[in-house]
Length: 217
Image: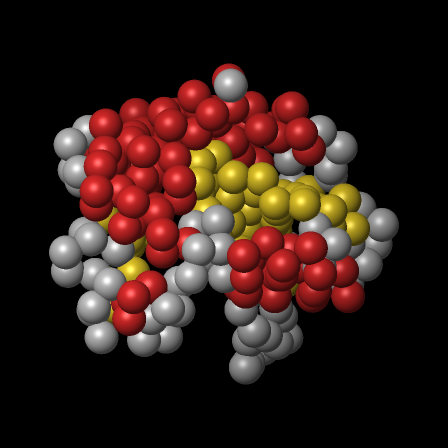
């Protein structure tokens, strides 16, 4: 129950700061071409110190309760880096970050920063959709000898594809809030009606077929 309340509180912050926008009437089109009633850009939260602190406090609580044993924090480039930096500073932990792919010049690094083989690395991401970028960050860290067991993000769309990706990667995923909590809070704030909430929440059940089902194609 306490976790659910915390998820709702974070969802409210995301909605109030317009890091998340819900529009069941005119859906957003993602780069993949998929249509969705929700658009998330948690980078907007960085501009609000009060909201930023609350998000970081919530993430620190999750770390204390569910992660605990780790040596280094790794931010996923680029959106995960600011959050990883703040958390590493708060916990006085070493920080690295992971690029989507190796640089094409210089030392061609994919991982920036230093760590030793056998050290436990906590991956920090801002948002989880399909989980692809986060899981792709896990592999180079493991290839370099790091132990990755957990990933922490501010929010998740709760997509089955992401759950499967993390399961296959043998990595636990923790998030401050989730899609269903955001839908509930959007309704409580009067951003959408109860009927619209049903349509919005149905998106996570079948993201690829949702637009056709509701006549947006």
